[in-house]
Length: 82
Image (cartoon, rainbow, N blue to C red; front, side, top):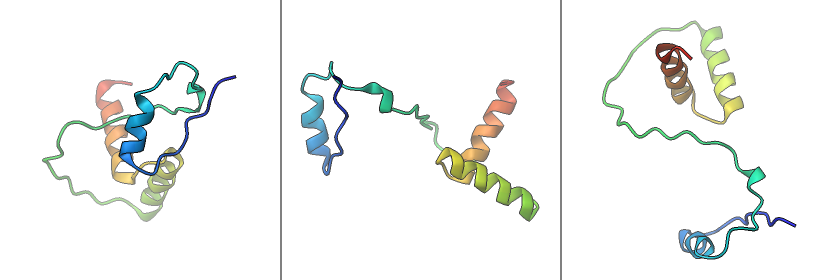
């Protein structure tokens, strides 16, 4: 039977856990994560209707991210053609 990954109270505890054998862990509990590595150096100012902003915030909350990050992801997909 596969082990679940425990919750850690410190970084040291997590690092110690990762030094051990991880072959029997249940990786189905992991969720994909997207990291933003590029620094955010430019600022954009735009006006949105309240209903649109509320919808954006609601969608962002469903994805578990901030609404600003959600808007960046939508823009990135739009310019990448995805």
